[in-house]
Image 1 (tube, rainbow, N blue to C red):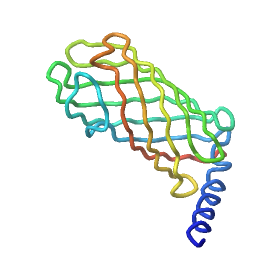
Image 2 (cartoon, one colour):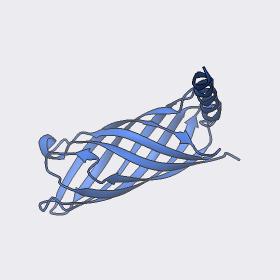
Image 3 (spheres, rainbow, N blue to C red):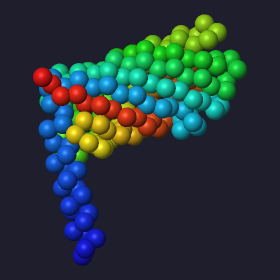
Image 4 (tube, one colour):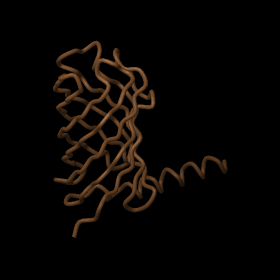
Length: 165
């Protein structure tokens, strides 16, 4: 019985903490670590990457994002990748889960360029009123070489939601 009460209290506090965090006019900045063999492609071996994002809440629960990332992989044919893109997120306010869609331009060493639309599902876990830990599962679709460069993976990020003035 005691465990059930604690679980209900945690669920209630999480719901209250997530509520009203995703208001129109807020600015978002975030960064994440990618790779570390938390993703799969047909061509890559070990990969390590960093990603930076900035966003703006255009309405309650809806954010527009700009993002850039850099990856270094064990693939000798394409050892480095640089991506820049735009996207959006929709937050399910009651629990902090977000659904995202984006489109990125990828430029890799060796002259490889690609357009990669993607989707993600993640969770914004608030550590404080403004700082979150954001695990997400993502899929990026390669238009140029599906079997080698389409990617499914896990991303672990940190976000800061700045209050509107």
